[in-house]
Image (tube, rainbow, N blue to C red; front, side, top):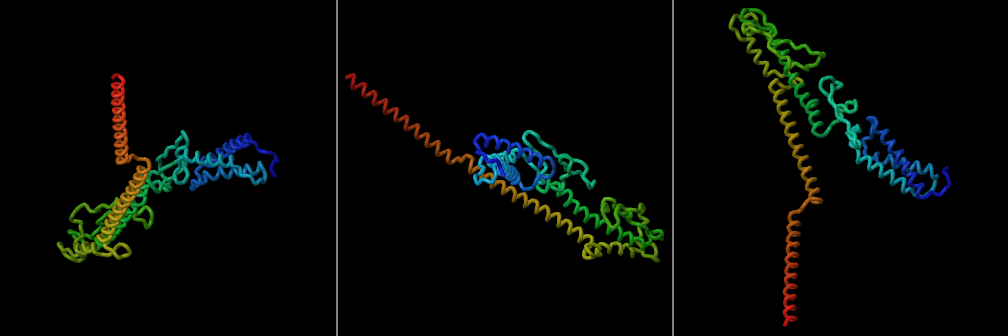
Length: 322
């Protein structure tokens, strides 16, 4: 139950200022951490609800509308929202005359650099803009391309070494590893296979081109090694190395085309917004030309009017003189 007394204009003003101060502290407490709600409307609703609740507690259950305190709360919310700029997750970037810089440091994954705001990593939260595009290209697109190349390299290394070991070289010795064997850092992973792919033999005589039990100059194993190019080693045994690589090139082309179309679409939207802005506040050359002609005609009419007055004055003076 509230205090039963009549509220004067001075009391309303004083109470509104008090609500502004309390709401300001409340809003700053939200911005102090990385927990600002995503919905920007809460910046307007929080001071408004606070003003209404506090007024009702102070005045008691009365039917009159607390116009002044509620208007002060709304005004505070609009002003505070206009004076701040936040990122998508709510990290404060600009507040009045203060600003917080984005920092680059080692990401939690350790593979690349990450984007930090006030000591908190927000790399995965940046999904739009030029920075978001670069991050998506680095972490998703290029990582996917490299993964396919690693799969191709690991498959070729394993299969070629397996087949090469079944032949004999020019000196009759058993074939060894043709490529340097790939040892994954994580069991079952092919990450880094393409980067470390290298030929193991150093002497052409060590190429195991001959089949086992054949004489010098036999190329039975060499033909089997060449046939590996047509074996379906990839994509669940449905694609050869060349087909799998062609799929990668095709995907890169699709991604590039999609990016170009997105840029074209966004530029069209931007041009439309600019045209709408110019139509509202820009200068229309045709209208300005009409205005110039109108003022020119008005000036000419004024000059002719002055000329007529001058002639009439002369006539009057002549008549009076005679």
